[in-house]
Image (cartoon, rainbow, N blue to C red):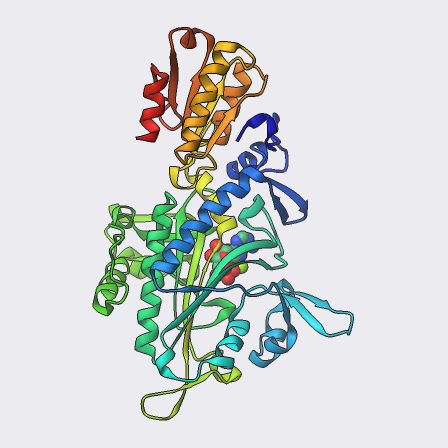
Length: 440
Ligand code: ATP
Ligand code: MG
């Protein structure tokens, strides 16, 4: 992508409305724009990061056996009247009427709709287990939307829903998502700790919130500090192994970890003092097992091996991609801007032409840009006629992991500089060496 033809509206000044660093940097880097309170456009740079986050989430959901579909944002009130939540949900639900005066709503979550899909076509235990997910916009009329997309009214969610014949089978489904979440957050460059959580308005029996420790987090959390270094399940984890997944779950729940709603002072005080971590955290995911809470009122049942009908046991599993992007920034930035983990960086490499229009500089940058792009890298080529200082500041602000800098002096020797955004380390090398480093 040539920066001269891209759309990346950088802000020079710090926006006054931003209270936390991620919100400030997302606005300054031209990633998002607020359209009305708590409702955002994702501008091209932000959209690239969001897409990469979603690709990792999708990959790990698929690995764990979940199946993607797409459900609409607008839902009929009827389904929610069946479950009893139409009245129970309160003011967070945006209620709308269509031209026939039928009550509709903008979905804050999808348990009812997915249960309806399930009951319309699954009739036998032989079709279980089943886990259906989508990545879709949600709307919750939050009383206090704030911190940019961290807590917005319209936001994106990956929500998965599992269906099983028995509680034991449902617990295996829960453990699959538990392990998938550990892998997902790790690939996003984050350390998320599963903590016992309140089951809230979704209701239920077993629930964990996945929390990233951050000073700006809205939740107060308490946990054993060893969680910070626990091993993440590998890519070859067998998601069909009941014992294997139970062992992962048991290990990751063997030490104290709870959010303030579930906090047990006495149990926490039993943790040796030096191992206690009491901090603030950002909730990036939440998983529930809630049994037959929806299947019973909505009549979602299957025939079991005993020939009888059984209400299915369900769970639901959410991750917030539009909250994850700022959460990653909270965890990874410096005074100059964002430092993206390579897995979600909007571009892999930025090629900075310090003097666009200068023959030698152009003749150096063009082939580097072409070769790296051809090799499948996402390359941003800063070919604008901005001053070099502005270009450096922009490259640091947008946090691309590698900068290849071509200035008149180095270019005269057939060389460029390669800078690592995270460490700031710089190396001078030939053009060929620079290309080979990232192509090989
Ligand atoms: P919170 O306690 O932060 O309001 P929640 O418990 O209401 O979250 P869930 O219903 O479990 O959230 O939704 C699943 C995930 O969706 C959350 O873990 C979070 O990552 C994301 N999410 C929820 N509400 C918002 C919001 N207003 N803005 C952005 N992301 C959100
Ligand atoms: Mg909420």
